[in-house]
Image (cartoon, rainbow, N blue to C red; front, side):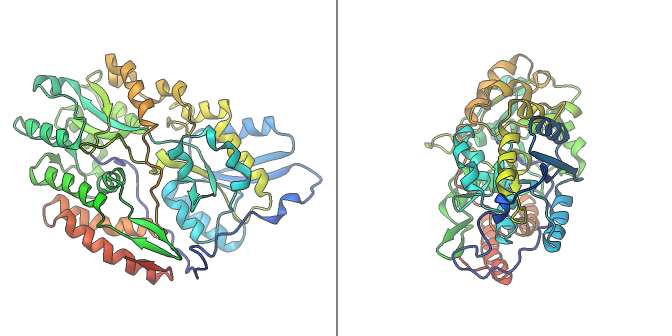
Length: 444
């Protein structure tokens, strides 16, 4: 499955010790420099790595007389975390920063971000709920969402038709379909040994909360009912050998496997289609979309908040013009021209906007070459999925350190050296200990 298949996971920015008064003592309000008078236009430094941002900045500057953006293109997400860490320490952080949902809590915990709720809350209804939540911690906004997370299944119609299989609507159906395909030497999904995002997103969908806030502490729970429900599905897939075990270290090989019919489905978002289109040679027009499978008896729910599917523009606390920075972030995520630039796979990143009404962008975000005659019905699947995105998932302050630890255990799970529940028990103890080692109050 590997929902975050080609996303890269990076060593986590170390979270500074936080003496808790409330949950995050370092979380403060906006900078008092908003009312400072200037003889000329206010210039706001903006760091990002996404394609198309330079064009958006030019458009913003052309449309604004008193506020200008100064854009610096950073190499990638890893470089951003390193450079921002250094800038915060040196006291010269930019006003605006592109980042992803999984890092927001960590930066808030370090006291690096400004609470911009008062400047952006009026625009909340312009965004879908899942995206809006991705820029928040404890109900406060520290940025503005730039992209959203429509998630769904893409599957090989020719293979399903050949063996009389219908697109799985539940995880039970998914496993049953996998057992049919196995008889013909085909896997229904792929679990890369280095990427436990499958466990993350199925737990998220099942209502799990690995991190939550309890008074003045973080509560860690890798063994709640939702997580165990996800673990059961994953374990059954692994125990029955329904999954391929191809590493994304050789991304082209994984794509060839899909193209050749070795694996018949993926749970993905719109941006991952680009890799399929770029690497396929045989199966164009043989793919279709269906909704993300549900847990039996439960309503539709899809995961949220990963890499490009959960991008945000954050405002740093060191910015002297917090109000203007917040308004600039809001403009970049809502201005029609800016949104079109970023949504296009040609001029931008080809990701879905974070807007509540994104219907007009769906056609550009999915591939008619990949889907063929299934292109039109696929658009409704994407649109519907935007209304089912998880809104109550919290990324903890040591998220990527935790994820790195989980990677080692996940490889053992995929290779049948330990059970999913063994990994979860380890992560429960490890995460509580890790948070405490960082000076963060935690309990399990």
